[in-house]
Amino acid sequence: MNISIVYTRAQVGIRASRVAVETHLSGGLPAFNIVGLPEAAVKESRERVRSALLNSGFEFPARRITINLAPADLPKQGGRYDLAIAVGLLVASGQLSESSVSDAEFVGELALTGKIRPVPGLLPTALACVAAQCKLYCPPGHADELSLTDVSRIFPVVHLNQLYAHLCQQAPLEALSVAALPSAKKSDRDLAEVKGQYQARKALEIAAAGRHNLLLYGPPGTGKSMLAERLPGILPPLTQREAVEVASIYSLIGQSRTAEGVFSVPFRAPHHTASAVALVGGGSLPLPGEISLAHCGVLFLDELPEYDRRVLEVLREPMEKGEICIARARSALTFPARFQVVAAMNPCPCGFSGHPKIPCQDTPQQIAQYRRKLSGPLLDRFDIHVEVSFQQAALLLAQGGEVESSAQVYQRVAQARQRQWQRQGKLNNQLAPAELQQYCAIPATAREVLERAMDSMALSARAAHRILRVARTLADLAGDQGIQHQQVLQALSYRGIQGV
Image (tube, rainbow, N blue to C red; front, side, top):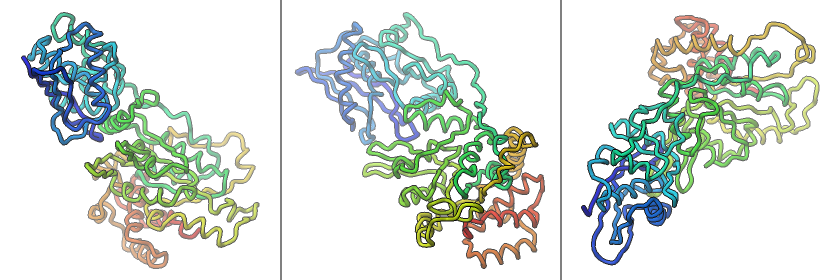
């Protein structure tokens, strides 16, 4: 047989498109050509495949070889096609039967010895392969992330000879075997370690219950970062669907979530020197950025005004849409980015504006320039603004006392989220404007107060919607069916940054 078709998968963002590896052997001077929009690493597979076949004891056909990676308009990158090309050559040269690969897909990079090396983006490939009811032959070492799909169709392969023996039914391979999925890793940072800051602690609980964006502002050393780092400890673990999405994103950059657990909530804290590409993703071969790595989790932006303003502005659209589209000349990739933002900032460059003990050293012009780094539209997207104020030494150094732990707060957060899922099938921060009338109706007296506040504080329609969502979360934490007057007032009080 002079022609064969073997299947593999291309990495296209978080999707894995099927690729047919068509191999044709013809007469003429020996040559090895790969077509179908391959980039440099794919073209170099010619040498890897040739050496791997010869060093594994197979015959390399001394003929004119043409490999077509179809569809031809889909860009192909990386060494993930090596294994499929090698199998295609074995079938086309008659060393393997066509029937042995009819219901299979092959992904992996070949070493010159014939050993199969891991490739990034294996989980999306496995999910797509299982959905197509095909067997997947891939490198070993991805058991934790692959356990999120049907492992009975996944066969880890160490060497090309091992795959050949299996396909020839000489030494069958065993499907991937994994232990039960571990539960989410418990955070070692507990809210009980935070002394005082009762208003900020309550704001953190509200943010966790409704997945609201939170802005903490106050003097340095008052516990802003400490509070933010304890947010994952009061959040429920990821669902099965969320864990698959998050693990797929990390798989694209070649990282595994084994250490923190596949069901643990992601927590990302990029440095304020991060570029826009590092934050939202991109590059010549687009990869997910920090906002996608924080999908279904928390993105913590410490020292918020120290970020470049242009970097912060790129957050505005994904904060609303829950995804980021990265457009390039030949294609556009969309990565999920449904994240919760927690940001921390000082009130002024020196940090001590409004401090009861230390005078501020900045001029009004310096303070205005410092705060001007944060645009109004960006601040509008934070549901809760709360001051983390200076604490007295007696409170900080007090021994004992009843301080709620993360486990206690978690129980209330989990119950509030359960009420939201039962009532509307989503969390409060995802309520569309049209759904606010149905789920966030407020008393007439509260509506009058909200109208006056909007006029006096010049609040936008977006800010008003976020106030209603926060009020709905306060009602859920209290176990109330409807929103009460006091809860609207409390939600209004969390728009304090405009008065700083």
